[in-house]
Amino acid sequence: MQKIILFLTILSISVSADYQANISKITPEVKQRMINGNSYKEGCPVGIADLRYLRMKYKNFSGQEQWGELIVHKDVADEVVKIFKVLYELDYPIYQMRLVSDYKGSDWQSIEADNTSAFNCRKATGSKSWSKHSYGKAIDINPIENPYISRSGHISHKASLVYKKRVHKNDTAADKTVLLSKDKAVMLFKKHGWQWGGDWIGVKDYQHFSK
Image 1 (tube, rainbow, N blue to C red):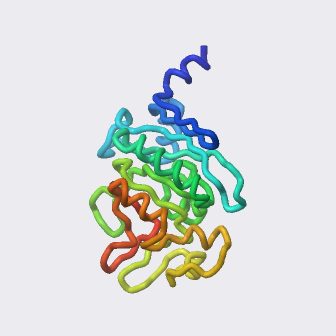
Image 2: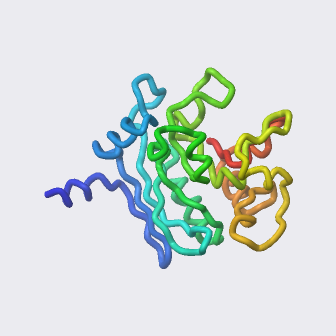
Image 3: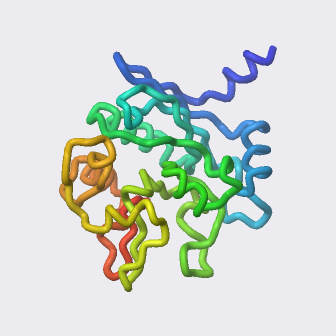
């Protein structure tokens, strides 16, 4: 009976010769993870019914296939799967992809773990307004290699300091994750109408894509 219930929560499955992903409604179990992990709380600007849980394959820094998870708004769920399918085909490495709930809803801890994430009910950095992440319409990718840089040039995470100069230096997996304006990964998101924090004037947020 439990297996039948799980199957019914899956809204769509993407399967190709070498790629798999699925989109589900937020189950009671995932909702409890979000609440316990402080990424969803009373007063959030989007309801649980408007969010979707994604499980998608990606390639890690060793080139191995891994299953990752993201929570996004239902309006962008199919699109996000399509984007990550192409990232997979491009051999774009992702260090890891876990719910920010696993880091107690802490954006800081998630970044320190170089975690690619999406939904998190929080205010925008340096603002009293809700972040795009609070609507499930923003994704942060490989945040150590793609840091947030303040107007003064400050980077908060020490591991990101070597990535302040935005150039490709070698053929390592970490270097491949560095997002530059003409890179295929950046152009892919833009093709689908997503804005990139690397284009911002003043502050730069190279990890950040929002719809």
